[in-house]
Image 1 (cartoon, rainbow, N blue to C red):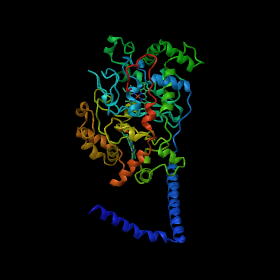
Image 2: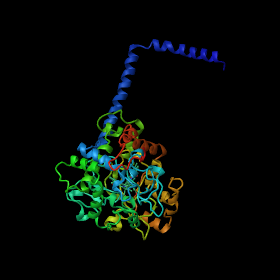
Image 3: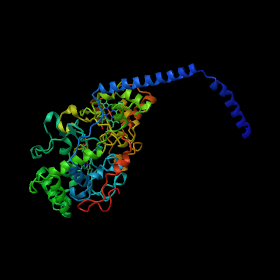
Image 4: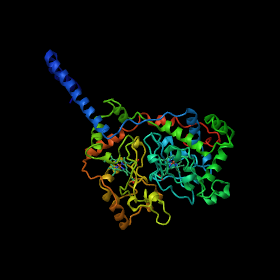
Length: 468
Ligand code: HEC
Ligand code: HEC
């Protein structure tokens, strides 16, 4: 069609429309207004009913407890400092880096002994003769919330009903009461994550020489290193003015780390949290439909319950077994049963919290799923997902492909004890659920996280980068 003709046609159509607009009476106008306002009334009413539905499950906007700013500042430096690691090549940030949204974007991470000391995320390469870390590095969002009573995929750190349980038993300093503080005592004790192997003793790693069950000895050896640095000594004395320099120990390191994690990764302004605080426009219509499913028909809230969207209990979802496992004899990871020894807990893992979940893949306790769609499909059809599992499709690191357990008898055992989300969801409903999961992401997440990376740390260990 020639251009001019097109323009004329459009003008004609426009012209034909004008009179009806012009002659629209006042009463039509009123009609339209009232239609519009009744629509917005209906939508605010339905937002109200959604909010009540969510709150009827004891879900509230998430909290971020106030922290001592000096603890936070010290904790930030410790979090990025490789000095805590026996071989001085791995920091907390190595596996929980801001650039990878407080995790490492790997199914299974790489600990000490890696040649890629200054790399994060997918650029981390496993060192020779080193194992993968057996479980997926969880995100650290909102771990300082008062609602937490457990840490780790198997809750081996727990403060439920006020009783402190941890792998260190009586060796744990009694002043530590918060799960996040207690957790921070343990990464440096793990040989694969931070402490180093028996062989590393020969390359000057004095911390690797301490016996595995001598927790006090390990903590003392690490703290001696830290406090020997003058700048660290000044910072510790300033942050803990009531504690004598001879009484300072690794628990003060843990207190500072937890304060930093609480403040830095405490994010309470996701669209979902804003919606819970009364902003009806914060969530998109699709996210609201997803929320109705999550807290209704799809019964996700049966396990993803409470403010943190986790019951902090353990469930076997029949996620494929992969990686080195927790038991060198079987090569398996039986999850909660590692702690309790109870066969009923086999292959059960703690329900994950879900704030910022869309940014923290791969998902599941061993990173077996690389998309939220597959995560949801796995909940719905565990047998199919387990039998047809494709490490390539799930973008598993190549070295892990051969570790996926395909033994049918074992799969039967896992499935026998598993729980399934027994509901039919169509494509659109799954899309809406995913939209809901995205509404749990805090605004400007990447920029806020990136701002946390310090330029340097007292030991001088950060001068070459770690993601800078
Ligand atoms: C080599 C990688 C690695 C390093 C280094 C590391 N972590 Fe982790 N982190 C993990 C993995 C893997 C888990 C889960 C382990 C499990 O559940 O058995 C975890 C769990 C946690 C958790 C528990 C979260 C939850 O929801 O239960 C916190 C908190 C945490 N790490 C903080 C830290 C701190 C603080 C440091 C430094 C002192 C640190 N991590 C060092 C990999 C690492
Ligand atoms: C029976 C309890 C239960 C129900 C019901 C449930 N989940 Fe889960 N969910 C879990 C457990 C347990 C895991 C971790 C399993 C593992 O890694 O072995 C998990 C993992 C997830 C993850 C991955 C999180 C991460 O950080 O790795 C997402 C996302 C998720 N669930 C969303 C949902 C949605 C959406 C629904 C509703 C369709 C749902 N869940 C229903 C228990 C449940």
